[in-house]
Length: 112
Length: 112
Image (tube, rainbow over all chains, first blue to last red):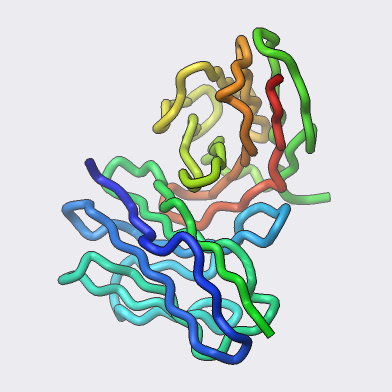
């Protein structure tokens, strides 16, 4: 079955350290790719998206993501996390049938 | 205020009752979506709509009914609520199918 996988359910990182969240998809063609962030009790907010072109995309809040076709991955990174980055992060894809599908999410905890 | 609003914010109901969750957007976005969010599953698409009077099933449509008589409204009805429908429900809208989604704040539904 076609799917979006976020292998890490929970990541704990120290403030100021780097962060990388993994996302893999299993669709045949290159889908549209997104990363969303959800703060506690809130809806989701778009961090960045990739449709085509440069495989390294910059987003809001200092996040970036790199599309790697050979690995079917779209990992999210941030060089130095802030306490306010504690949230749940969702990778999402739009495959050929145009139905946006989300991964199960990765919860990020930031320790002082 | 402009944006996407969901009501109610919280709802408690009993099994077998009919429940309608409301979603209203002021941008005249063509696309609207209903997702449910459950621990370990991320967000799963229930139904979506490409325009007024056009709706289609998502990943988990059973037990739900939608309508879209007006562009700005996309209510979700649980015809006979079950405990398995206890979840957080998010409505979202988008101007185009491959553009970012704008999310409401969610409705937390408990079915007892």
